[in-house]
Image (cartoon, rainbow, N blue to C red; front, top):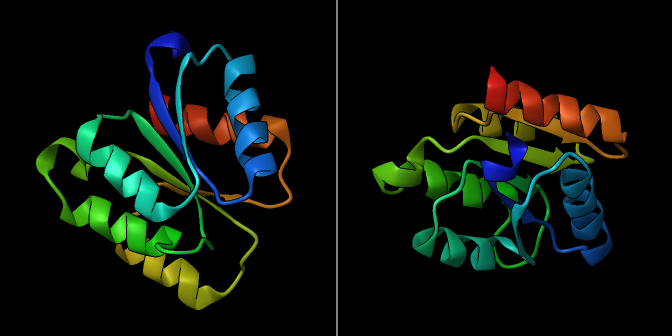
Length: 126
């Protein structure tokens, strides 16, 4: 079933991006797109539809919160796309801001593979 989901992984750190993509592949996700930063992700989102977006919080050009704002303020076809924020930040102001823009959940760094898969399944399967 996972092979039909389209997932966008956004992180400026190629090692983290690759790790998350490999975790997804290990769970039989086949349609994985990667972006190096929020601006590149936004450009990709304009042309493609995704079932899930996993984005880093702190990135150059366009951070995770700004990307989330664009997604939630955008066209109907991607406005409701589930978004999981990957973050090492525990600042309450960041958490409140993300909640205001209807984030679907967090993956806190450092993370365990099991935790990432549980969060993804929770968002995709309810």
